[in-house]
Structures are given as structure tokens and as C-alpha cells.
Length: 220
Length: 287
Image (cartoon, rainbow over all chains, first blue to last red; front, top):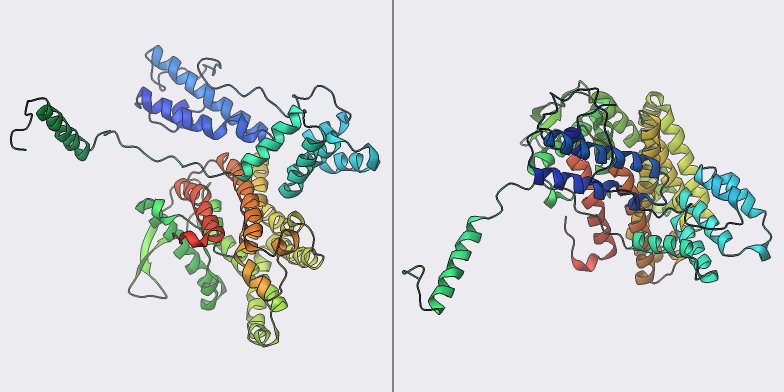
């Protein structure tokens, strides 16, 4: 798929370097992997992030070579790398070193929640340690049962306070529970100084001048 | 359970507010045309959001023309032209009518003897228009019917908050996923619909907390958290915030050809504003 990289970033072809950087940063904040760490939509967000990164790198490359998008050959494939954001290395399934339930983890990863749950339900009550509660919490979370999930993650952390994986997920739950919406992008117009700003600055300058014996504006 | 999914008007540009109103007025017109004049009273902001979501992916331009408001002839409204908006408006109208019918059934079940009587008078009319809507869009009727039965069941058994919210959450997830154009969009709509449905359920529970407590009606916050307002609403705030976080993440993955700014306003600002007004009414309502 060869989309116009300017369209992907939501800017015009004659956007300034600053406008492109702002657009890129806003999209990177939106699709950052950290926002989708435990989400069932993580792969879609990763794809979007990759598309945005590639579009940004493509624009940098085109501008460096002094070309516009229309003169750029459609055979040129996007190339990755460069100064773009890369995904955070932390990953729920990758951050554990040992697991008692590899099959359960695979089922959760592939969305087979009932299969994962039936394995966990078969574990005798006195064998249910921290990881059992953690994985059951993850099943509830994927199902959308956030209240139950939170309780189970809390129990897992209480049972194994040193476990970084459990602590990481529980901390994310806490930050989601105190979530406040980001501001959506507003169009900022080019003028950075209003008339009021200029007038106030001149008045301040005049006051400072008068303190030092001069007079910038004689009439005030 | 209606009216929570709305704009933050103060943060919306005038041109976007005008296009939002055009959808609202067009939905009113479609309801009147397809289901009698009285159906216009069922109009809601939530269904306006649904109509906009359906129209957001349409190819081509969306145009409008001026017309007179049926309720206030002195007022001029913008109405969307039929071309690529007819079907989304028709779907939103059908869903309005079907959900209103089940809402009426629910109110009858929850009401005392004297309030039941006038509600029963409305039932034949609502049933008739619901039947018409169900013939056009049987999938909506099936999903709504299942939601109504599951909700009754969950609340009679006094289950956990998640289990009580599940029917409404699942309902909206299914409704949106029916409208998805491809597999990826279906996954996003399922996640968005689920957490939006859950958020709406919790908003309704928090908003009706004191009323339900007084009238001894079922409320998931009373049965699972506390009969103390502050404790119950703090938990509602946490759960709503978490659902808001998750539905925002899903919404962010969608690309809109139309109404992008209005939809962003609703999801990123409108829902948060409504939540603040419900949980902290003492801070003064901002509309």
C-alpha cells in the first residue's frame, strides 16, 4: 500500500518542518505502544505506529533529496529507521522469565479466553499462587471485566510483591483508573504573538527603561 | 440511559457544531418520515453519535440544505442530503425505536402500580413501530432483545458490577460490529462498543444512585460497593475512567472521512465532561 506520507501525517505537502514534527509527535503519542500494552488491539496500533514512522522518514528523505511527493517514484518502498519513535521494549508476554502456565499464556495471547479459563479452573484451590491470579486477571481484563481483573491483579501483587510483571500490569490498571482524557489536536494558527503581547512587552520595556534613567515612550 | 454520549459544546468549533446539528435534525426528520411524527420525541444525542459513526466512513462529500424545523417553524435547520446518508440515518432511526421500546418495557417493570398505567398506554404504539423497525433491521432486534433478557437476569441475581454491565456492553459491541466494513474495523468496533456500553451503564448507575437507593430499586453500585454515596461514586469514577481510557484507545485507531472533529470532541471531551457532572455535581454543571 503506497499512501501519500503527507496524508498519513495529516499535513499538506508545503507544511513547514515544525508542522511536520508537531503532527508526527501527536500521532506518535496517539499510537504509542505503551497505550496498547495489554490491549487486544495492540497489533493494529503497532501497524499504525509503523505506518506513521515510515511516513515521517519518507518525508525527511524526500525533502533532503529536494523532491516533492508527486515526482517521487511510486516504486520507492518505505524504509524504516531514522529518528522515529520505536516501540517500548516492555511487553506483557515477554517480560516473564518462567511460567507455570505456558499454554494459558498462549491461549490468552491468541484470544482463546475460554480455553485459558478452563485450564485455570482445573487447578486445585491450594495450588493457586500469584501467577494463577495474574493470568485469571488477564482473562477478565481481555473480556472487559475490569473490576474483577483489578481485584485479581491486586491479589497477585500481594502474593508475590517482587514480581515485576504483576507490578507493571497493576500499575497500568491504576493509571487507567485515574485516566483523564488527552486534549485533542487543535489547529494552531501561525501567529505566536498577539497584539496584546506586543503592547504589554513595550510597556514593560518602557518601565524598565525609566527605572534606569531612560524613557522608551516619552508620553507614558 | 440516554443522553450521556454528547458533545462538549464549549470546545467545538462553530462549523463542527453546525454539522453535528445537521445530523441531529436529519435524524429527527428520518424518524418522522419512517415511523410517524410522534417518533421524533424519541430522538437522542446517543443515536446522533451512532448515525455520525456510520456516516464517518462514507465516500464522497456530505452536503446539506436548509429547511424549517417541524417543532419550531421560526427556526431554520440544516438537513443532510439523501445520497450517502439515507441508510445510516435509517439504521439510527430503527435502533432508536427498538431501544426505546425495550426501555419502556424496562420502565414498566421497575415502576409502581400507578406509574405503570400510563406507560402501558404507550406500549401498543411502541410495539407497532418497533415491529416495523425490526422488519428492516432484524439483527438490531435480535441483539436488543437478548440484551433486555440478560440485563433482567443479571440484575435479579445481583451479580458483580462487571457482570451487571456485561449485557449493555455486549449489546453495543455487537451493534457496532454488525456495521464494520472489514475484520480490523470489526475488532476496533467491538472494543469501542464494549467499553462505551459499559461506560454508559455505569454513568446511568451513578446518576440514578440516590433515586434507586430511595425507591429501593436495584443499583449495581449499592449492591457491590456501598450505600454511601461518596464510596460508591468513587468506585464508579474509577471504573468509568478505565472504560474511557480503553474506548479512547480504540477510537484513536479509527480513520474518519467525515465528522472526525465532532467524534473526537465527543469521545475525548464530551464523555469526560458528563462523567464530571455526574460524579461531582457540586462543582457546578458545565454543558
